[in-house]
Amino acid sequence: MLTAYQAIITNFFPDGFDTFTARRVLMDKKTKTQLSIGLFIIGIIMLFIPYLKSFDSIVPGISQYFSLMFYLGLLLIMIGYYLK
Image (cartoon, rainbow, N blue to C red):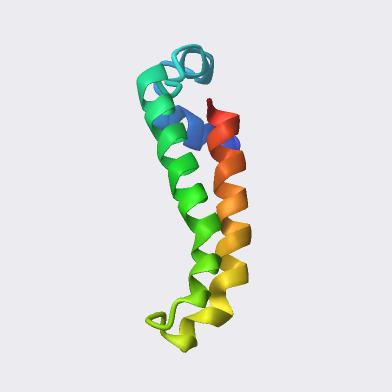
């Protein structure tokens, strides 16, 4: 008798779970590189957004989110560097 987990695996992977893990699709190198560069550039842009508060044209209501943008930018840079 199959357990619930085995029944789900059997329904989704009729060839068996081992054959699925053997042909698991990883991110190809080109996509990984593009994602890495994109996240890195977005992160750098978000790092410099807080320096815009010296301009008078920036709406004062968004200045409270500058620290969030800064730390999110750092996180995106780290993810972009990790994917490199």
